[in-house]
Amino acid sequence: MLGDGGLKDKYLELMARNVALERVIEFLKTNQQPAIDPEFYRYQETLIKGEINNVQSKINQLKEEHPHLDEFYNEQFRDQLLAIEADTYAEFVRSGRLNKELAPMLQDVLQGEN
Image (cartoon, rainbow, N blue to C red; front, side):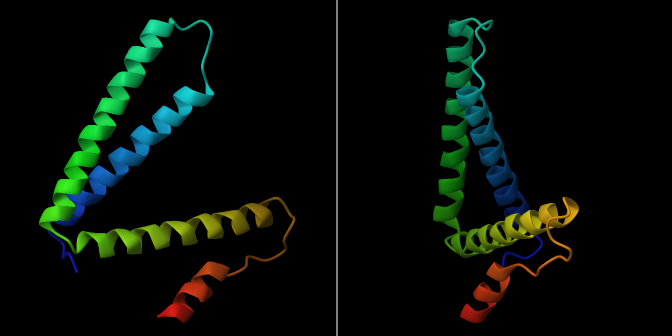
């Protein structure tokens, strides 16, 4: 759909950057440390949120210029859901709670839709 060109790579890089920054914000929310100066904390949070807005603007611009990116993103999102499910099954196998890996049920469901 997008070929091997730079558009696909640029879009994936922006999406990865966005996810990484969102994870940093989540870390800041859940790991507030009393030893850190609150003003420094707020400054870092403001910088990160500003960069998230910048990245999201770039993503939106790409999507406006190339509407087919939505379909590509949906495929990437579906693959991510399948990977999460497969990793969970593998975790159960590694811990000995399951004696064989199960094929991701989501994959069967999603393939049935096609």
